[in-house]
Length: 130
Figure (cartoon, rainbow, N blue to C red):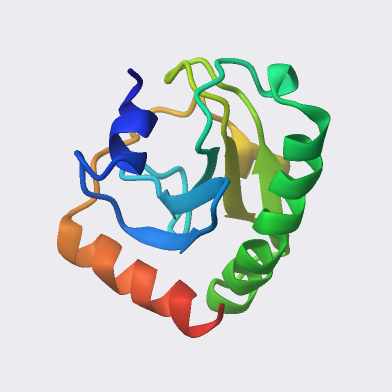
């Protein structure tokens, strides 16, 4: 069972942004930028392109209002989308407020665990615009 499956089952708490029957979105606790959200299908599949076609379509539709809320909440040129999938073997996408392509660089040093109090504030700000 992956870390994300444990979050989906409620075994590990998260800072939830949205949830549907098929997907959950929550804040990354090691964000690249403030407002970094993970969108995760509830079905446990390692690689995103191994998801059924309908899931791929619906994942983007599920993510769209979250991306718009991120853009309203944080000063940025746009909400970037990144799919890497190396750290957790469970398909997922990253929604990150960006101003340059380097803002999506996961090789940057210094990713640190953000305090729960800060994450709660970020969660509230995004939810207010969702």
